[in-house]
Structure formats: structure tokens, C-alpha cells
Image 1 (cartoon, one colour):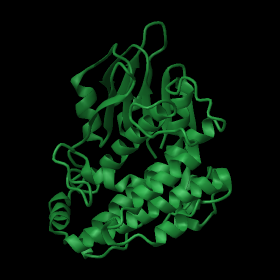
Image 2 (cartoon, helix red, strand yellow):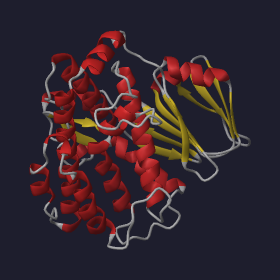
Image 3 (cartoon, helix red, strand yellow):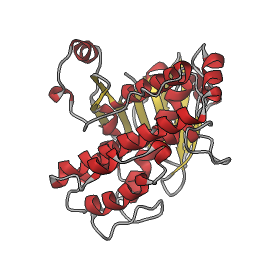
Length: 329
């Protein structure tokens, strides 16, 4: 269980005794063990770093997301790899047949559409036909039912006037923020599993360094959507990217989600799907473990023996102190 740390005020970041040291004028120093950090999000122009911040987090398999003046993520720094089977696993990935990739993409799209339907059913008591649409998805989603599902999903979830755009009005900025952190988390899990984040199953753009991350994050997007909509059921998001909004979105990584036969915190579920994909490539099958239900708080999670063990060994409390946000994942 590791943390997402956000810095949103002037600060000086350095490493001391393998800990991230955060210094701010007029406030006590804060320290976090580098090995406990999953993602460091920096959202203020007056933050300075030592090179050791980047190299130490990379050595500990941590990622860094840098935001611009508009508070939108501008870049992501990832470790090269944290898996000693990288050569073999990337070889299996690159050798995967087109039919296998097409079958995997079908399952990913089906899972995403079903998750969209569950989110709609939670807020409006019906899935607007998305379960039926998911059953009709063909290999490689030849009918582009993913797009058809989105055309039903967003108006039903956020109203007929909502437009899902990067530069759109609220709550687009919150969705963008959540998706960017999610993308970094998925890319980090892929590199940790020894896979090439650049080589996608479906996404193939030359200028996209995270094609596979964009593929694999699709079924997890609805967990961000659920958190964002729950912030303001009546649509009153106000200043979407304020501290409260960001903390709530990052809290999605604390939620327990069903994947395979057990419930796991979202970040561990992301690592599970990355490992499952590596096995699919190596063993040439399409039995990919995918999320299949809404997120739950820890106290509402069914307690299988494996879940009990994970719960007893984790602290998934969400913290927000001053302007240093910490979400344990």
C-alpha cells in the first residue's frame, strides 16, 4: 500500500535518508519514505527539486506528475522498469498475435461499458441499456460500440448539455485530473510488470508514449467518474480543482474494487490487471482479470480470507493536511 502525494504550494523538495523531505516557509518540515510513494503530483510553479528526488523515486518505482500554470497535468515521469523479467515479458508482448489483441480489446471495452452501466444504475437506478450494449461488442469492437455507449453515458450521467472535452466546463477539469493520475498509475504498474507502456493493444498513435496505459485504464475510468459525480449530485462543482475536489478524486484510489475473485484497493487492482495482461501475452490467452463492480469503502467489502489479509496489512486512510495532500494507495 503506497501513497499519492500532492504538493500545491511553494515548497522545496529533496531526499534525506531515503525520505522525501518537503520544506515550506513558516511550516514544519514534512517527510515521507520514498519507498512509500506511488505517485508525486506537483501543482505549483514555485516548487524546486534536487535531482535525487527524481532518481530516488525512480529507483523505488515511483512516478511523478507535473502540472502547469492552468493546474492541468503537463507531463509524467516514470521509472524505466522494476521487473527482472522485462526482456521475456516484452518479447511476449511484442509477439502477441493480432487476433489475441483484438480479443483482449473486446473484453476491455465490454468491461468499460458494463462499468458505465453500473455507475448510471447507482445514480439513476437504471443502466440505460449499457449491459445489453456490452453483450453486443464484437472482436476488436468492430461496431465501435464504445463510442455509442459514451453517447448514452455522459448525457445520462451529467445532463444533456454536458460535453466531455479536455477544455470543457466543470466537471471536465476534475475528470481530466483524475484520469491523468489514473493513467500514471496504470503506466507505472505496466512498467513494474515488465511491459512496454508504449506498445498498445488498440491505441497506436506514434506521438503517444502510453498507448498500453490508455488501453488498460479504460475499465477504471468509471471509478473516477463515480467520485466526481458524488462530489456534487446537483452539478454545482464550483472551483473544481480546489483542494477539496482533488482530495476527493484521489480518494478513489483508496476504494476497494472487485477484480477477479477478490476485492482490492484500486491501486492494487491496477497492478493485478497489469500482471494478468503479462500472463495473457506469455500464455497466449485472453482471460484478462478485469474490474466488475462499483467501488466500496473498506468496511463494506466482503471478507474473503485473502481480503482479510490485505485489510489487516494496510492503512488506506485518506489524508489532507494544509496544502500537502496524501492519499494512501
